Image 1: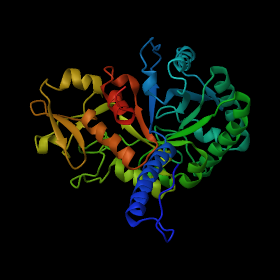
Image 2: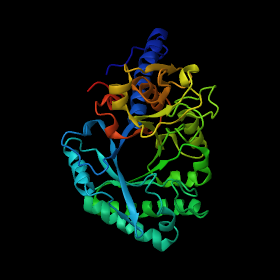
Image 3: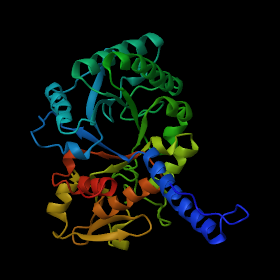
Image 4: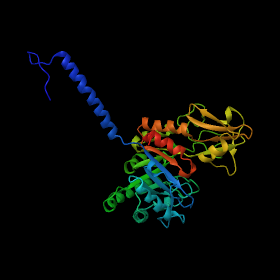
Amino acid sequence: MRPFPRNRFGALPRFVLATALIGAALPAAARDRKQSARRRPAPEIVAYIFTRDRPIQPGEIAARKLARINYAFAGIQDGRIAATGPADTSNLAALVALKRENPSLQVLISVGGWLGSGNFSDMALTPESRLRFIDSVVAFVERCNLDGLDIDWEYPGRIGAGNRFRPEDKRNYTLLLADIRKHFNREEKKFHRPLVLTIAAGSDQRFLDHIEMRRVARVVDTVNLMAYDYYEPGSEPITGNHAPLYTDPEDPSHVSADASVRMFERAGVPARKIVLGVPFYGHVWGHVPPVHHGLFQPGSPVPGAFAPYSYIVSSMLGHGFTRYWDSSASVPYLYNAQKQVFVSYEDPESLALKCAYVQRMHLGGIMFWEYSADASGALLDTIDRAFCGKR
């Protein structure tokens, strides 16, 4: 490269110096932005798949749009991990086979869940009982060619769905996860691939009060924050947004995904380890008076009512239900004035705002429960476009 001409005093002319400095600064800034983007991985898309013993069909899962699949659920029997359904073995094989389409896809087995957490406290009680469980997990992961484990203990130190619990759960939860991490680190060399350890976390302060979150965050790869079910029929006397992004000032409970994320960060979880959970289903209340279109009004459960997103689109929208938007919470809801039925749910508009939030807050990604609730793929497509652009 030819040097700039210098004046008789050996200095660069002023206009040349200014041009050189500007020219050097612009590429450097662009280079810094590129390097920063490279250092920050794209947000992950994590899907829970809960088949209810149904075999997974060919072409059912859009593997290229997912970073990780958590197959739900394995249980705990005699202190060991155990498959709970007749289709589990073949379904796990089908999911692992999706790596032919997406070689970077990770497939984890999720153990526990709301109805499957009754044996966690006993299993985690002693070093011997923890080792028995971990040895069974390693064998299960090896046998099924999986990439790790998701612990969905609902919840340490609390009764959950009538589960056994004890004060020692708080410390034993940490010890269990630390022991799994230690064994996974050792087995990675044998398996010739990383082994992932994640947890499903309740989104409220009660969850944090019963675990040692700062210590847990050091040993897990991600915390799947279940930022939904803030309001459930029968659990509270009034209706509400079951997955609000921000806190509505009119909300008596003052809950939101944003509040939970900030709570977990204060508790010691790095933003990059928080995966924001979103629901692919809605909650339904009946006997809701026509005040404020049913939002934050008295309501009661509707027997047998469950509203996966596909059902909301096919049988509610345009079928007597009117869609409303809570601009403070950034979520939609439905109300049928004739039937006095209120529905809180997630849709592409609210989900796109959550994706933008994940990127703005530099979170680890988005997790959703669960895959089959949106047969059209509209919600997954929304996440995919937000994180990966047009394919």
